[in-house]
Length: 131
Image: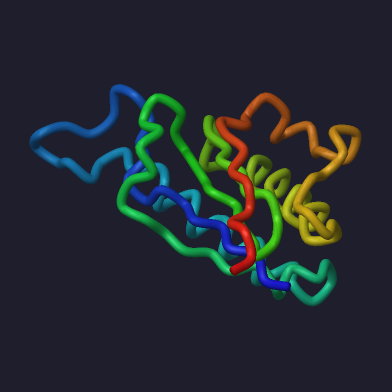
């Protein structure tokens, strides 16, 4: 089953960018690029080929950049924030995505969360009902 990771492409760290260059400091786009790179390089060995990365202009969690929304049909969805655009954070997220993909309902036991994502959950979104 596929897993979508929607990354806020306009997230930026506080105090970066400005009127002269509004795109300066946009760490969301950097995070998305890092995530795609790590997923591409590890897909064959980890089973991450079912993870699709997309972006959205704003996920409206500006006080917690970088922000991602994880979703998959029939599974609980999650919003995570405060993810730095660094390889270690991306690798922790990929570890969580693999654990998430191994569940039937999207609920990963806390003991299976990588340390890099603990404390970064913003919201839990129930799966839409089957119709």
